[in-house]
Image 1 (cartoon, rainbow, N blue to C red):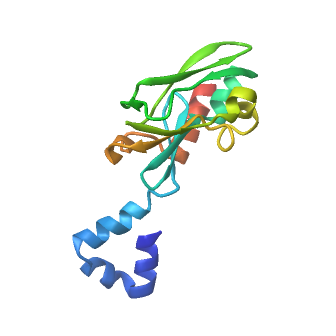
Image 2: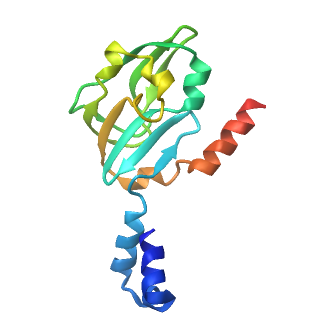
Amino acid sequence: MALRVLSQTFGARALQSATPAARRAASQRLSFFSTKYTPQHEYVTLNGKEGTIGITDFAQNSLGDVVYVDLPSVGDKFQKGDAFGAVESVKAASDVYTPVSGTVTAVNEDLAESPNLVNDEAMTGGWFIKLELDDESDLDDLLDEPAYKEHCENEEH
């Protein structure tokens, strides 16, 4: 968006003549408030260097009614791919893995009393943890929304 605004405001020439640092700064702003997905149906929604992590609507539909969520503590550190918690439903129990490395800054304490939030609001109120990202390059191999939707369609067949 920042690149588009810069381009529309000052024209393509201004963007081309911008310093590499200015182009990098503009492109980094694009990662704010974006969501990335794993093929295993976890998501991370970015807000600057903080990521909100949970399971996708596809995952909660597959699990059925969620009855319990086990979460880590604030301050815990995880590497990309580590199991950070578990979710139990009437059908199954499953570990939940972090799509990025970082330190937990918040846990969704509402899930202790209302684990059904995962079913009702998987991508909003049903989030599991927030963490401060260690390395934004962890996002490079995650799926964007169109690629994730395609992945889910292929998995359903």
